[in-house]
Length: 243
Length: 318
Image (cartoon, rainbow over all chains, first blue to last red):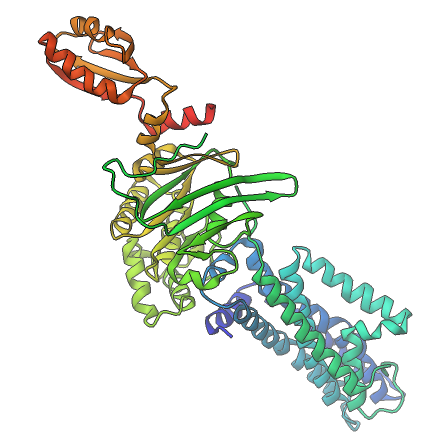
């Protein structure tokens, strides 16, 4: 990993409007958890688990990773500043590693606290039953997998944001709900599988069709494959022309 | 026809090539951007000249390893440029695009580049590079507030911070004011005098003429001429050369010159003669001999269409 590129990526992100968007995104589940907590609940644990699955895993996690992952290298490719890191004797794998590490750190810094705080608010007054821990670990694994995929998309296409949105809302939100066989190609399903295996709530809507170890291995495989492909893509990356 | 003087005028063999293109073509779908271009360049300054859209940036980007040639190879110091990031340890590249990391100060930007080159003393190298482009006064201001000319100078500082032997610059003088341009040209000349290979693209003839004798002229994706542009002009035997001559007796000299077989046109003006010849070397030898035989003193004898502009306009019209 290249430390200069890692530090540059963190600083780049801090200066972007996207960081404000992410702050807003991270506050949404916390605010919703407060509203949720004020209501009456038949089964507070089950409903909190469903809340974390529907709000954090389905929406906040992929959106935050999409915003960060596609801009980590994609914005430099788009505006032409990528030339300053590409015209250097730095191996392409070191560039991707630095971009990936910085993106994971940023995404985790927003999504993990939002998960923990929302979970603790939702479960206030009742036993935790491993729900917060389960979702925190699941979200952390999801950050690695989603970020890797979105970095790959940003290196592979100029329409990374659009394709990423289609993946999150059409593929994961619609198709994997309709056809159970597609769950193997859904990071959301991996996250739910991990959360489900750790949390000890009996019947939950989010109960995943993938087992915990299986889901973890699939997520790790997706992240590793996406990073590998991103490196390969960057090795044969061509700068667009102006002449 | 490609015109390429093979050796220097004094017969000395050219220095070893640091940049070499061998039968390089590049196309985008059905559009041919660069068509079967070959050249080799050694230390010194070379201007990559051509109209907008001629393929200059494509050639420069292939030399910089940012574009894969569709056919042929581009080599830098004998190594293939494409997919060879290690070569940047010895190559500096100044892109045409104005975009920089606007949130960084000038110093931080050059320092970032120094760190990415893996220099042992990035701070010292950054300060030297900033001094070389005379940007010390603005180095602590953010790049977002720089003028285009200032950004260009900082981009050059970032490209020379590791003291490269090869420097590739894409339209480096865009947006610079005359004073900045002169300063940048002086800097590039100094670097070339130290034995570096410098290639810059431009569509502005004046810039190329002032900085480089050696040119690569690209027209519609083809290399139409390479070498010293004055030598290229002399190779254009199908184009008459024009001289202005001032002498002690222009009228009598005109009569004597027109009788020489190297001359096919003489025009008598108020202050000088305009002589047209198809044989540059023969005429420059014949004119003093004829004047001496007639007892006439030649006060001035100047070729008038050896400028890069005339060479370029001839090449583009070919």
